[in-house]
Length: 168
Image 1 (cartoon, rainbow, N blue to C red):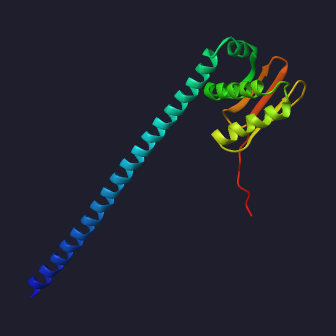
Image 2 (image 1 turned 90 degrees about the vertical axis):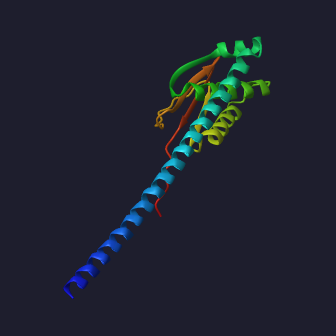
Image 3 (image 1 turned 120 degrees about the vertical axis):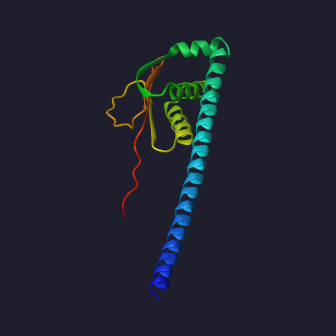
């Protein structure tokens, strides 16, 4: 009788071990699958970002190679202060050039709006832009989101601030 009870306990323990082993195996398998899909997703994001940068670079090269007017325009640009990636800077210059080309007479407000909309659309909200010939400023910006440049006698301040949701 004692042997039968011992055998039942061993069988129960063996079944419990088998159940736990299957559970752990399924957890490990799910983790592997999730990890592989996360890696694939990250690789896809990196490829998309590289393609986006290449596309922006091609656009800037097209601006530079487009003719004498474009080269002349690029010579007029002076970066006064920057905490921004060069690709974003080039995008700002290209956008400014397009707005300049579309206007017979510069409208500061229109240029500021165009730059703000371009950067809000491309890089998320909370971009701000100030354009003018004489202004002072003291701003707090997000890391990597500040550019102060001039085109002839017009100065452009483009910066991004952090957006934090309000607690209600």
